[in-house]
Amino acid sequence: MIPTRVVADVREKPSGVPDELSSLGVRVYFSQLPVADYVLNPEIAVERKSVRDLVSSVYDSRIFYQAARLAASYAKPYLLIEGNSLEVEGLVKNMRSFYGAIANVTLAYALRVVYTANPKETAMAIAELLSQARAKPLSAIAGAQPPKAKTVPQQQLMLVSSMPGVGRKLAERLLMKYGTPRRVMSLTAGEFAMTKGIGWSRASRIKEALDAHYTRTDEKRDQTRLEQ
Image (cartoon, rainbow, N blue to C red; front, side, top):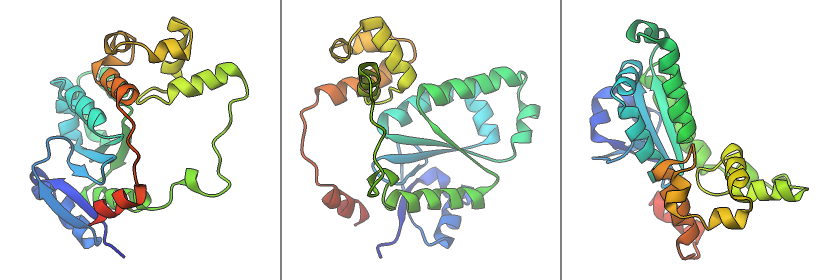
């Protein structure tokens, strides 16, 4: 079996996580990554932050910039928070404001959040993400069919919410404002960006998905290329 592999940012070397990954049988390759700390495949990337760095990034607004780039570059972005959460109370002045910022950035950019206590747990979490990413998706298992929308409004919500970074609430907001899925999908990037909760980064991803010419992909060939 081809061994699992991950690309780590060179600045992660001192963290101890790459060494722990190696001990788990994961091959680690280093690179100067422009986005994220660990890239698992073309869809999945992980931004690792210690509790102290997370607090610092909230106060200097760095977390919002990093989250925007992460979400724009990868379909399944992860924010991994490493350390003792009890430290937060001694580092922030307003707990509610801090967690409000975290909630805002994770919801705005659809970040998946993982908590770990130390580098060893971080490596285990990344190794399991790698393992599950290589496994057969649950949606592809025989008999596992997505729920079918029974009414026209449900079908419209499913249609609009299938766009990149658009969940049910955003889809409903767009439909309430513009009326029909056809009108929503004909919006300019600027009109998308003006909708509360979307912003320029997500608007660009939506327009790219709607306007790019379709190219047939060979999933098996792409996976083989990734693993080589």
